[in-house]
Image (cartoon, rainbow, N blue to C red; front, top):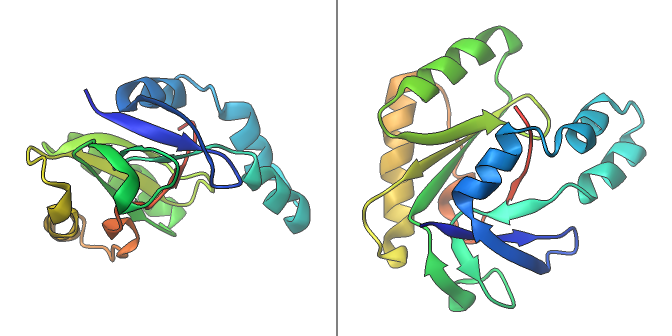
Length: 165
């Protein structure tokens, strides 16, 4: 079972939990109120403050003390891709294509609602090769979707904000 670390707005580790448990919480709407309030806030200062209170997680695995390679205690074998600033008219089709892909483990809209968070479960448990796995996954989805995919998820300590949709 893939266990991941949850971190707070101060980048401090708060807990560890199974990845699938957090995904069920996201899909079940646990964070709907806080994310919805963030998305609909018109004041940028208030929005920034709200964002700080929305939990983040480290999909790469379990960390102790800090989110650095040295402190990785359990590698989740999960690769994250961030698809940013998707045109609203393209969002539903891209989301559908991703969800139908054989390699997609989980996908949800990002905290802003303008991009997607995509997760792939890989079979290799060598965390040292995470950048290579990331590149392979990125290449697959770039060919499949024909969109630009940034390098954001390549780092083993790349964090992700929760969402609800």
